[in-house]
Length: 310
Image (tube, rainbow, N blue to C red; front, side):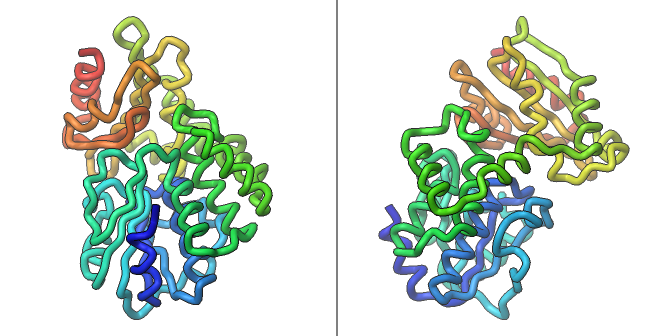
């Protein structure tokens, strides 16, 4: 699977790892698991984030994540397109050689070598296989980071993207010492008052369309500020409309500080939300995708709901 990129890893000692902007559990778990894999091989590796995320307090390999003077190889993880690197795109392009590891079907490949496996539940699943092919032992720390990555993108091994291979990997990660209970408590069973306030705003905004087949929530930037929440506490709010028993498509619209609107969509087996988001210049997976709007939140809602019910 990784035979084309392993030579790149072997011939470089200073490696830059870049997850996508607005990092989530999969991108962070994958990036820091990869860093531990590389450092166990004697490499020097640095994970460059777009912003600090609370998950970094839990993940291994974050506390000594020290920038290097120079990088000769860049590895992008869980990033569907080069623009999703944001301002760090220049660092990726500035490296002598570039590799992409991803599981988004919309990724056309922007590295010198690309491993894009759309059937994988998560990028974490791919990092597990990469470690195996590199001959690196899966330590409890690496296992925990990968477990968080997979659990984050698979809803605790519950979503339709979970394959038999995903389950086998999960079992092996437990055998290797992954802290599964702590991971799932962090992801699914522990909320701050600020996050609960966001959930209150989200529930108050809940609307349904097309006889309940489309469910939508919104969070304005003012509501976000009033809640006192951290940006990462927006994660998972799309599961509120997703949980509606009649909904085929769940939509979460959030207004950013600059007035742009981020749309996150989830679909069941009756809906391909990647096509909806692609229409607006976004992308992602069949069951989970996103896009952006440069208009008011009400206008963004009008446009995307109209596309959802066609």
